[in-house]
Image (cartoon, rainbow, N blue to C red; front, side):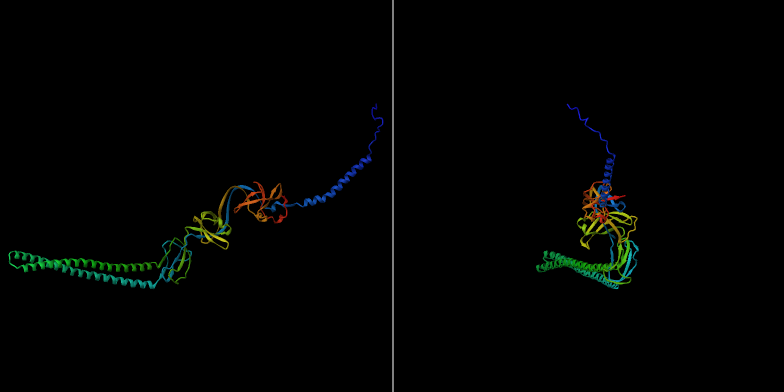
Length: 422
């Protein structure tokens, strides 16, 4: 049985020269590898851009209510700014100047109309003549009525006499004093007197009606002429042009002492008690406009709430004109045609992801955006929704709290990733 090979083994001591050589070769190899790999690493590292954070405009993705609105501009106009017109042709005298404050029914201009004055004198003379004719007719009617009453009285006297004569004839005939012929004659006389009395009564009644009609005709003529004269006098009083509302004189539309025509505009009066805003809205929002939409108007450093009261049915120069009704500024001095800014609210969305608007929406058509995570900006696909004046809704691609670069992407639009240096 062989117990082992220990008797055949020989212990050999390691060579110090070979160990040193091995270490030297390893060190040289590592050095060459490092030197050769440095350019490649440097080239890879230099491919990722580094942008200073101070050069970027960023915003956090937040979740809150979003009001879809539009920012527009316009001017402040008085809701009631009537123009005053000439009531008659003539020479005008303007009693107030532009900028003067006037009260309602205050005389602000007068006109001189010689033609109207001449008409008043003519119609006054004609009215006097008609009144004289009416008085003369009344006197003639009284005389005619007196004659008719006298005829009626005469018929009454004849009738009474005929009745007495018939009574005497009756008594005489009964006593056989007169003949039957004389008795019949007395009866005929009585009948004739009765007929004459009856006809006289009818003539008097008909005459009274006729005289009443004639009196009414004369009265109507006088009344008609009186109304004509009153209308002329009203027109003369209207030559004193009065302010229709409390307000301020806007501007003269004619010159002092100018000869004006009928219904010619003289001046404008601006009612300062109620104002409206006339806004110009881009055609893009035309389909969203509607009466009653809330509008926030800013002027004189203050904000006022209003509502759309009217929308123009036509589009001019790619703009839609809308009128916004708002209360007058309490302590603010308002001016006609003052420039204002407005914000029209179209829709309100509750609790949606959104970020502030910025130039980044135009860089990739609103489909991509750089999101900063761990000091590295990475291009992410996003989907935008509704937008307001300050914010835009983000439907996908981001989470609440993400930081999005909202500045322009022209400087690094060719990169999909870059570092952010503080």
